[in-house]
Length: 328
Image (cartoon, one colour):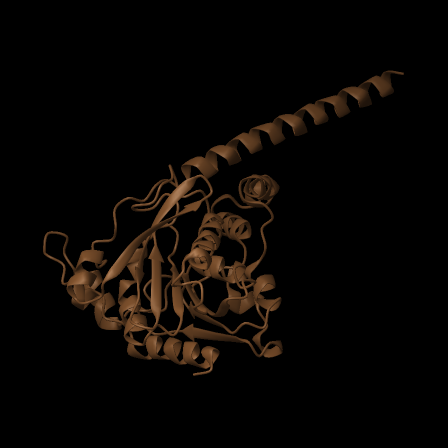
């Protein structure tokens, strides 16, 4: 009898502990999602402005579209009779202006380009950036906008995404209008990325908290797919670009690890090992541009042309990829 009472007390205490830990973990997770991704209102000092683009001859139309309860702001650049529409999804916290250097190249080659600020970034609404899955929802919203726009709806779509924007591009490959996607420094799964990144700081606790992160992410954004599963489920051409020394995406979450390009003819993985360009951000820039950014002093004016010089081979390889995907 005494033993039964003891067992019941132990089980009751264990149950109370599990419930208390679960409630506390869920509360911490909710707070994490609301505080770890604050608004980003200040563009990079090295980014071109839209007014500068207009003065350089790249006229644009300012557009807006809903993403959930927020209104996002974007800019559409279009030459006469564009061949296709490139939709650019920036990395989390980066505004659409962070890729205006690439925009100019795309427009010069006859493509229309849509850049936009994601939720909680720049000119767009949102009290915060939401999380690593938010860019996928925002890109989906941008594609809905293009489908309803009289001029853009008939154009084939080429995706260009960096980091979380790269993950977003992978999740939107099921859109029949998407003819190709370039994914730069992308990752496979947003919640697994948070877990794998946290392991180096909190060890096994990252694995313990993972189910709660996954649950909160699902409550906020719905079911979360892996980028590799999305890519493997379509025949759409996908070009992956990664830096060998990417400090933000653990090797376990890199698409070069999770994708088997040898079994899929639609996938190409390009690894950059060049000094300065082999990290997470700036692979599209030349070594001279990156060197300038690193050596620039805060109290001196920024030479925007110098700091935004593109790597010639990088941008040419993407243009070749797009042309091949369009059959031109």
